[in-house]
Length: 383
Image 1: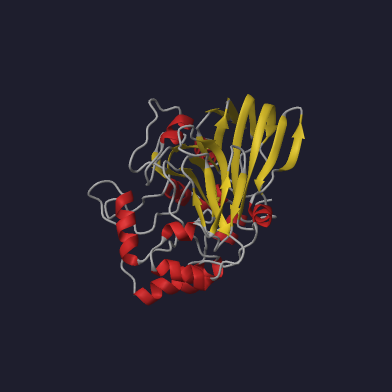
Image 2 (image 1 turned 90 degrees about the vertical axis):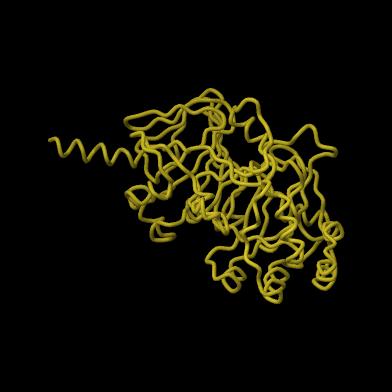
């Protein structure tokens, strides 16, 4: 009898929600992240504009003193604090499920979720699609990504915007000539500048030029990769990245052969521009209702129609509703209000700014609340 009880307690540990430990990773900003998390006083800091949520992905070239930078920590229900990847390794099949293990293995969630809070405009950049990432970096993942705008600053010098997509007629030759001159302002003018507002969603395909504008606060869901290319020469790149780091910290990337650097960077951009209307049709994504009732509604923010690599939904609850069992783990963010997630044998209170990891199967799980809004993120393969 005693052995059975001990086994049941261990199993229950892996079939209930886990509270994630909030982090900040890099980049100047973070005030809006603090506001969402209820931290007083909210403030910007030199390394606070990004938070990685439910991550088992490390930043590119992590510092020797922080080999797991980018990886999320959590507190298990029994009080133990550890990295999420360490917790998964305790019982991969019970936590991730057989379908996830078959498709992705145990060392990746198949997605990466972030807060991005742009105190200043991000540098113009692009990410490789999967074929280019495999060819040039030997990576199984490219970096398709998406932005769900959850806030805009009210003290920016101009209305909040993003840069996204080439204008019609832009050629590689034109782009490369400006790159050789390190003329970033001219390169930015090759792209569409789009005013944004809270609640909008933008998909950023592999190879598409983009930059968050000053004042944007978004949830970013993407492939689990940290491969980024920026159209500035190696010397300029070093100077630019150094200026973004805390005082005394040096960029940690290794100098590449100039020819390889150019090939990787120029080949990662896809020169397929279009006019303003077509650009918005391609990349601004309207919500799609999945289910609704007296309890509230659930809508796709990004669906499998936009990409097969990840998806995520917004769940607005004014009562109680079952958690959909997708057969895969999920990562949840409490965006508004308060409530709880209940399951067979327990309950976890939720309030604005909470971040949770949901193992693939939680018996009889349901969300409850009078005004609870959750963002639920799903890896490739979830239905």
